[in-house]
Length: 365
Image (cartoon, rainbow, N blue to C red):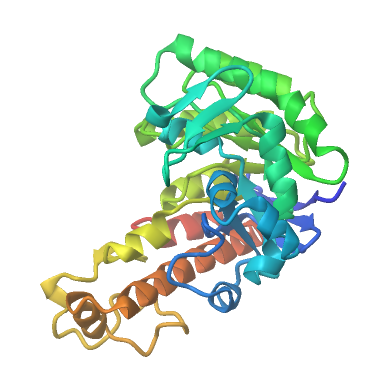
């Protein structure tokens, strides 16, 4: 198999795992966070930035790249690696998230999903086979199975129907991939324990290269998210990677790692950066606030990174106030550096057995 998970060790106090995900484009140290590059780019950054921050795996989106520039052009360029210039590993969302987010522009049946393009209104059909074929042409390391992700709130019947459709599509995803493309299956079931157990039981009976917990962080409160993750993660095979889709607040990452999750993605660090929000060990701060107008030092001395250390809080506030594009770039560099450090320190804490100290360090983040 082109993708393989290697378990290196476990935390003595939690279910946290230290491992490696071996891919055709390099080894990913886990637990790991994937910066989101929906259109084949992490907003405001170049790949040299992403590499210098220490990230080894990024996420891109099947639906968006199939619309523009189109998977055939990307394939002719040598896949997304050749087209975009990223040398590390790539995981692609299958388009399943758009089944939920573009609900007003699509019709879903057991055959697949018929979309109206958000770009020009043209009609597009996405089936499990089509989704996997697009991801194969993109030349990615990990393809996600097309699934049906229900929003929150939804009725139990709606959650059960989405899970059923995800199960109907699961073997079709695998059949389309053949032996050359690694596909991760996605556990659904909403907030319902029996459905989550049923979904995990069925999907883990299939030869997926890894497994994801889907349908989380889709509008439910945190107090409902945590029990789902705590239930679902241990149900997944210990010899394969476990991925929690779309969850990215630092406290949520720490909780999920404690349950045995290996991989994360989220738009939070990049999107919040574009809205003047910085992550620090003392919590999120508004970089545009007047409190920083004459602050010629960092926002948080404990959250200073080589990529941005020469720039003061006052200067960044000035850039945002002046609507300088550089402000968004600086804030994005800061936030992704924060996340990179968080994941590195998580891995170190698992290795050293110092989880309580790590928890205390990030208690306000």
